[in-house]
Image 1 (tube, each protein chain N blue to C red):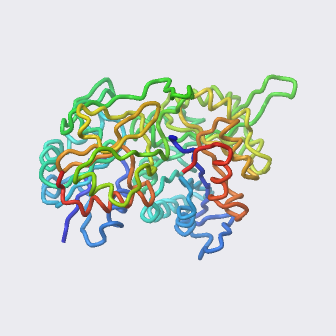
Image 2 (image 1 turned 90 degrees about the vertical axis):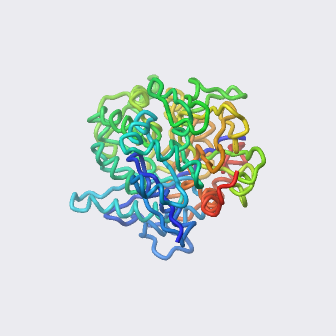
Image 3 (image 1 turned 135 degrees about the vertical axis):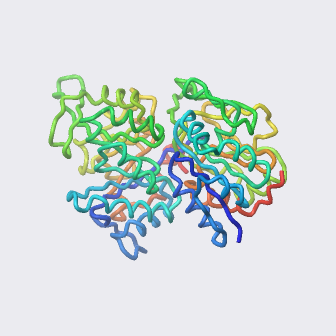
Length: 256
Length: 218
């Protein structure tokens, strides 16, 4: 018995409201981040991730009061990502009550940001989000590269090497999303997850493609993930966190 | 009205800690402060902290808080959390070695790399997530602080360095992560933990609730 594998629901937040809807039985306001966070806490989520997808710069600051409110009422770890460009953004989110800040595109364009942020606030607060896509042909050895702009723009950076570089720069955790699988509901990209998890000493959160509970268990057992992140299967009430944990436990995975 | 000071030396997220303390002590005045006099006037003190040991010690010294902490730990209930625990020890090996407050004799060291457990599985560092805390020892402080919390409850951790206290008598809780590590220490009116009670759901809130009603008796 030891460290539990974590289940992390991920919420997209636009201009201070949870989008794509959350379909819980008891929820008052499915768009209210505090209500949703409270429900997930009560349901047994191990951690929450908020992704700020606010496009308009006018509404950029709307994430801060959301983080403040959630952190004032829900006492489990909270990771916040989206639009983090400089160390000041990291500090502001942590001061608002985030426990960890996820850096994505900015890390690709300015890798030293990860180093500076980690030096300042500690590795345990810095998550580097990696969006990877397979670039090898079927008859070639597997190879994945980092993509930006929602998987549309290639960078030519090898995903495994990038993960190692980010770990070396002081990332405390990697949030790995397979852009090939995101939204498909056919399961995590397990070879990608395994390759990254084996390549780095820091924990890896698997993301992208979850459609059922076995996918979560596969991410841990076959992919070697330390945590699994999912959105729609929980938000739309297809499965509860408790069902997910019971299923993972039945496969011999330690859960809280 | 009881006053609880949350020590602010510019290192890390204090909102979660202060809100969690307010949550369990609705009738107390909770102040987040870097002011020596306010800390000395408080009935109890909570010292959180995140980041690197050298930065934390430097920040404590820069705010003139090192001697204040060394004094208040003996005179009222005091809780250290995460880095607020590690700075209480004698020395940390982080950042090439740094002297700490020496309230609790012992040192702070990094998990081995690679960290391998008994089943030959490689463990990730930082130690991140919910792990089991075994309550250790017997004393009136332990009885008060662990009240209502099942032995073996899980708490949330996020750290790469851990404490090695000199005396086993101070250990109030241990966790297995490749090896058995001390994750809760108590001495006199001090209780300090490596995990984050403010992020550990109902068990964490119960621990904080126990702290705010503890009389500080060892």
